[in-house]
Image (cartoon, rainbow over the protein chains, first blue to last red):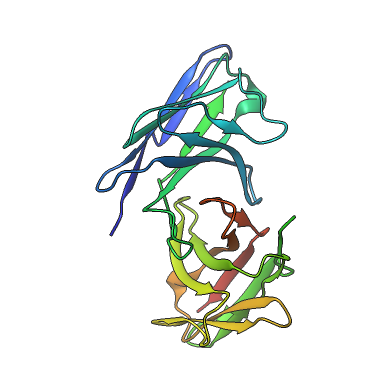
Length: 117
Length: 115
C-alpha cells in the first residue's frame, strides 16, 4: 500500500532553534500534502495544505512566517518551525493521498514529536 | 461549513465483544466521503474503512463495519470481536467532493479493551 515517510520521529531542542520536518511519499507522487498539529488528547488540526510548485495554503490562525512549508517536488514536502519556542511543542503529522478521487484515503506519516526546552 | 462530531470521549469494551463508536456529521454537500482512522499510542494514523455518500451498502473491512444512516447523518464504526490491540484513539473524518483532498476530523474516541 501507499507509504508516507516522515522524519525525524522525535526532536528535542533549545528555544530559538529552527526545526525542519520532512514528509515523503515513497511509492506515489503527491501534488498535495497536508500538515497537521495535534495536542495531547485532542484531534488533528489542519495547519496548511502544501502544493507542489506553489505556495502553501495556511489555515486561519496559523502563522506562515513561523511554519514555513516547501513542496519542491512531487514526493517531498518540508515543514520548518522557525525560532521554535516551548509553545510550539506538539505532535506534527503529515499526509498525502493518491489522486483526487473522493474515496482515496489520506496516508499519514508516523508523525514528529517536537519538544522545545 | 462541514462538521464531524464524536460524542464518546472514552469507551470500554470487554475483549471478544463488539463495540460501536459513534460519528455524526453535518454537511449540505450531497457528495462526500467518510473515513475512520485508528491512532495507537505510538501516534501513527491507520486508515480503517471508507463509506461514500452514494454507496448503497454499508462498508465492511474485516472486523470493521460501518453503520451508515444517511438520513440521520451518522456513520458509526462497529468493531467486532474486540482484541487488546484495538485499544487506541479512533477518529472519524469527512471529505467533501468540492474541497480537494482535505479531511475534517472529529474529536476522537479513546477505546480501551479490557482483558
